[in-house]
Length: 148
Image (tube, rainbow, N blue to C red; front, top):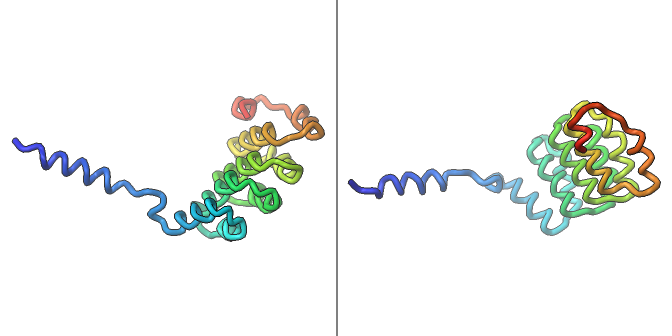
């Protein structure tokens, strides 16, 4: 009995797994993130494809450009995709600054609990002494939001 066909089948299966970078646009978003090209990443935040918007928002967590906090705040409040909003909240928390905090506070009222939780965690990373009041006034019985 030969073992070659089984090994060949295993290798073929492993190679058929598609990387997210098989999508040329996602590869381009990754490249723009590495180059810290915020103008190009902002373009992808407006894409019709929610996967592209998700990745662009997440890329800003690495770029940490405070000049795009207002744009990320708009995405956080307006994008119809929950994961895009979560990624925007995460990116704002990584970026920090007054504009990031100002964008995150309204997100505490997001209709999706996971977005509000991410906003709370992001505020914990980025809120300054003057902003702590908004966090101390926040009350919930939702355990997911308490975790945030």
